[in-house]
Length: 115
Image (tube, rainbow, N blue to C red):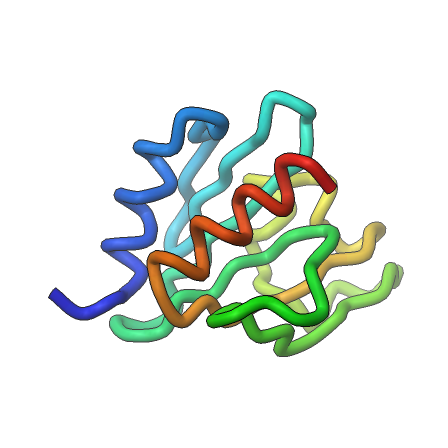
């Protein structure tokens, strides 16, 4: 089966160090035991998009697409992101990543867990 948001969601829900928090429309929130939040955006059927507050610069299969700086304007990032992950909302920095594979997501989770 091809790598897609459905596969990524299953992988995240099965991850031992993550807890599913809330799903709204096309996004699903998760939290690490440290309190760090992660959001999976299911914006299309083939691209895995993840929002986090920190990201590695050079990691196989993990591409930084956009960095959102804190703003008082409610535009630019996914409209429902604050409802599942407050620390990734408009008042905070958020990074949108394209994760190209299961192995890339596994590397990213390990990096986020210890970063």
